[in-house]
Every structure is written in structure tokens, then in C-alpha cells.
Length: 390
Ligand SMILES: [Zn+2]
Image 1 (cartoon, helix red, strand yellow):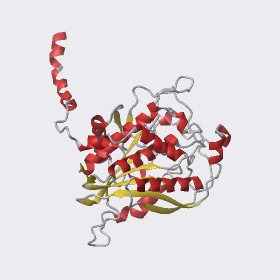
Image 2 (cartoon, helix red, strand yellow):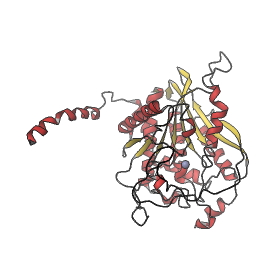
Image 3 (tube, protein in one colour):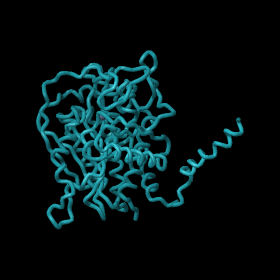
Image 4 (tube, protein in one colour):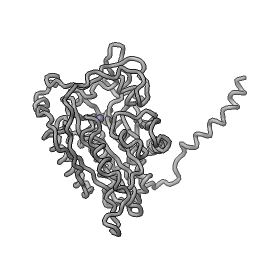
């Protein structure tokens, strides 16, 4: 019996062919991915945290936006544009604790031990006086802005992928993880792809949304204002496409923390777990589910090829982020530290919307997971847009 089983196994071994070395040793994408760097990624997150929690509708949020735009320009992504919209919220009702439910509209099931979830609204829970005072100004309704810049394709300027994160935060911390980590990822990829020796066949837009934390209002404003402009040459005959056709939307939201399930007492390990991974999620109930899944698998393959430390996994329950409003218009995915519903929703990240979401709370093991997500997206997008290196 044993012998029979052993003889039956070679069929499975053929899968190993995938792991063999690429014959194209001088892969230009490998060279680009090597231009990412843990210290640079950390420095960009550090820069963002200087503006505290960057809550929408405050001076610190507007100052952060100015800084992000200035950085993008120094990277060579000089064609920055601002999107203007109004945000006038309904009176505050408070969100309180959540995540206790079973199956939500977006699927996903929470199993096992749980931690607390919710949004901290109490300034006194921030022990650092400097950070507490930095976050003191309340949000005011009114005009809002967000920023994007675009690498224009050489042969297909009329089509693009959107690579995005949200720069606003909440919770009386520094929004280091949520979503300084995703904002820095987008900025780092903009830096690498804006290098003068890089060209791409298709366009790539680097977008930093505002008002994610109030219900993805910034991403929705972008869709409202620009979805009907897609693929239109303006002025006619100019070769310019102010809104290239959307080929895909890739959101990055909370990239650092994957410490495992809470213990029985609700506490969570202090250390990044050795099995940490990048969670690529699409929404199986969306109009573009099949194409979004295909996009997710392309990202998983890019992770295997280009990421240095951590693997990726694909899941079907993308939720609660700026890719949501896009999911019925275009293939949309999100990259995260954990699954949004089953894990973050179960309280696996105790820094989520809490005063502990500060730069000093995270270690290199955490930042390295974010760097691996950056390598994954840079590798995947470079393949999708046809990047070339001079
Ligand atoms: Zn977020």
C-alpha cells in the first residue's frame, strides 16, 4: 500500500516547475524592486506621522496633503492634481464597538478568540502629550481635497491602473499603520516608477484618498467627478487623456501588523508572527468578481517572484476600504496586513483606530511586511503596464 501511494505522488510534483528560475536573468522589474528599501519606507511613514492622525477636515490633514504632494513632485511625479469636493457629514452618532456580527454583506466569518474593536474618541487615552495636542483641532465640515499624480503610458496613455491608499486617519494616534503604511507604499512606488530611466506602455495613477474613515467619501467623489471622463482625449487630437480608462484599482490599507489571533484573555502577541503574509482580497459579490480574482492571482504571482520575506494569500471578501466603491465599475482589489472581516474584524489588530497606532509602536518586523506588500504591488503593476528600463 505504501509503495502504491509513493508511486502516485509524482503527478503532484509537476507543480514545482513553477518555482524554477526565470530564464530572463536580467529582469528589469527585479532591478526596480531592488530600489525599494526598508529605511526609505520607514522614513516616509515617519514623515506622515509628523501630522498626527491627519483627521479629515483639519489643518493637520491639509498640511499632510501639502507634504505628500511636495514629496511626489520631488520623486519626479510632477503632474500632481488635486480633486476638490465638499464633505458635510450628518450629526455625529458614534460607531461604538463592532465586529461582533456573523456574516456581513461582504462575506467573511469571524472565528476563534476575539479582541476589542472600535474607534477611540477619547483624547485622554493618548498618553503622549505632544501627540494629544497635535490632534486637538476637531474636524470641520466643508471643502476637502485629495491628490493624485500619473505616470503616462508611452503606447497606451489612454488606459491606466490606479494604485491607492488613504492619507486621513482617526483614533488620536499618528495613523502610522492606518493608513500611513499604505500611503507610504503608494509614494514609494511613485518614486521608483517616476525615475527618468523608467517607461511604461500603459499609464499608472498614484492616488491618495481623503475621507476614507468617514465612509470612503474621497474615493466616491473621485468616481462621481471622473468616471464619465474615462478614455476621452482632451483636447481632441492632443494625445492627452485627463482620465485614462480604468483597468484596475488597487487599494492599500493597513500594511504592517500580522501578530496572529488574540489569546483567550484578548491580548495579542507583541511580535510579528513568523507566518505573516500579505492579504490580497477581491469581492466575490461584485460585478467584476471574475476579473478582480484574476487581478488578485496576478498579484500573488508577483509576490512569489519579487517579495523578499513574506508570502501572499488571496481571499474573496474585500471590504471596508476605498476599492469598495470601484468594485462594480472596474476590477478592484485591496492589499492588507490581514483579512479585513475575519481577522481585523475580530480584533486581531489592537492598534486599529486606537492611540497605539503611532510610529514608535511598530518594529522592523512590522515595517518589513509593509515593504513586502510594496514589492508585491510594484512587481505586479510593472508587469501589467509593461515597464521598461533604459
Ligand atoms: Zn484604513
